[in-house]
Image 1 (cartoon, rainbow, N blue to C red):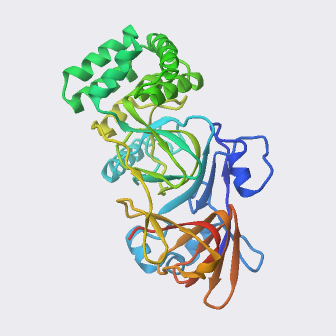
Image 2: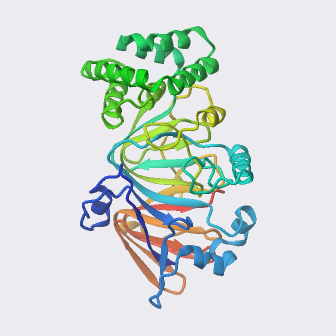
Image 3: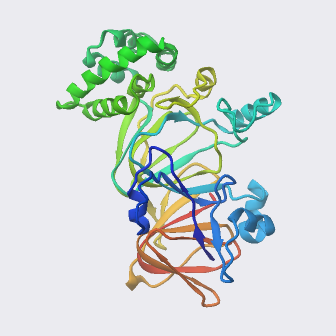
Length: 400
């Protein structure tokens, strides 16, 4: 078991204070959007060894894949950690986006490789051949958009705004079957003349701000729309976002996002886990490339209520966030000193992150590794470890 030294990603949408506050460090004055814990080749964690060395986790895995990951993980996913754990701190909205499924990612990556598109090209869609399911668990109240709202409800929401240029979209949502209606409206919004859409966004934002001050079933969605327009004036994604469910998570609640589901995180601090992939197709709320034809091929045009997850406790005290994915499994332990130690399962790699209080890891040989709030550790597959303390610890490992 080794303490992790983790890189911070300074994306512009990040909070200046949330991650430093959790880590107990002074803010730098710059956004700290994500703290990465894992072996992503773009920014791997380092493992702080007892001899004073701190090699990248990627190097440690490459030197001994089966010892670090376990034979079963290597057989399933190859000699690489299949998940990435993060602290995510959003002070402003992230892009409206969607992720491909396995087959779409493999085909898209192969096609772009055959075309010779550089991996760092702005218009590159598929950086790798993997899918990117993800799960976010809120540490503070967390706001987001997730999945299409039922078309007739969205038509009602649009009609109340009373913006002339939105009325054709409301008519389409009434007139066609669900999948066709959602596809036609999203296609029309993203393909509209940018100048005309900028006017629509301005009128929509003004109407949304007015309605957000009144009671009603879509009050939170209107408030989110007005806020998005402040951050991304004139962006078609502001109107596209009105097609999606607005969701608020309370601390301890989680949201699972599978392939083809459009979503955007709007604000809050959370623990996020995902398959170790970079494949993102953007719908809007971003200055980055938006590939409309490819996006429309990947999006699943079906309405769904956000599936808010709450952890299910097993007899050993592990509270599991159940998600239908092989690459990762996220759980948490709410520790109490009176409970003594809990033996953690072995045989697969795991990352342990303390988000409240403190914890200690005890190895079979008696060695101990304390974890303060914000600290994390990597436990090799072949290690037997006991967890104790007085606080909350998230456990990330491979799916069963």
